[in-house]
Length: 462
Image 1 (spheres, one colour):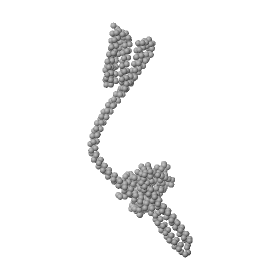
Image 2 (cartoon, one colour):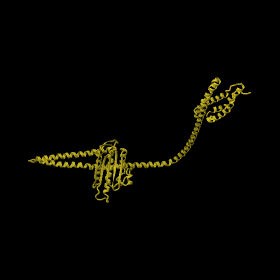
Image 3 (tube, helix red, strand yellow):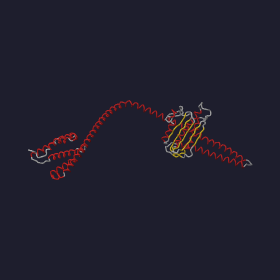
Image 4 (cartoon, one colour):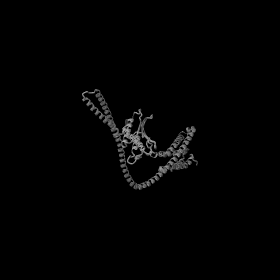
């Protein structure tokens, strides 16, 4: 007996079975949704049941294949909704939904309004073609996403293997480190003891440098203040003699008023000079007390010309206190337009005293060299200059023994000195360099030629 329904359903059942197996593999259903995987494996049962029911009950509908197809699509949509957290499943859902909607609309029209469906047959054919293209396009997109996810999974596995390998290496390294720790502990204790000894020695050397600077400063102050004190003493003695002469003249029967007036004028001049030199001595003491105060690191407007001139004389007299035969020519050029500069005057004074002392030491050493010509004149030059770039410059130049290239590269290193043992600690230029570069954001450079002399250049921001 011929069947009264479409034979296409016989082809849909094996096709559905093949599609289900491909879908199970593509979506990894055995691991993701085991129950749905089992149910999906029985998708052929409803199709067979539909065919048997139609045959037994003499159902003459020709839409059985479309009903079965719609059933498959609805099951697929429900499955994909359960897997919507999985990116390829979401893409497949976007692919299947339009075709599912189209199939449902077409089936409803075929059952309820076949005339309308036949009238707009071309429109529905176009819609079906579009839905199929949409389905195929998004299927390929989902497949690419699947490949990408698989690639990422492989990369994660490789990263995990790499992490495990690194973990193994770390364990091995920790074992090696633990073995070395025991031997390093003893070395650490030895180094700690050596460091303690080094700090003690460093403290002693710094103290020696401070005492050496203090000695030079004290000697310079003593010689600098000696001049005004000598003037005060001399004018006081002369004034005492003038007073004696004035008393004798007043006791004579015939007084010489012109002589008395002259003696009084001389006394007045002497007292004026005593006051002047007394104030000079007082200003020297006051200035030295100010510079001897502990630095608090605060910058104040300072007259660099006066500061350089004051410490230049102190350094010169400090060296002459040790060597009475030493004499040197001092030349200065202080830029009158320099003005005040914000510096820590106490710290900068220590730098200048150190540079001046080294300059006089260099010319003294060259002066005592037997190979030097007899017409050699020890000379130390100091100059200040205001640059156009908003900087000030202090130059200290001498015509002393000079500094060799190999030594010139080390002179700013701590504890490096070219002086004989007992005459230097090697900290003067190192501390000066730190004061200029770190304390004042400036530069301290040196240029020198052996047998020609040395020039130190201090550059400070205005």
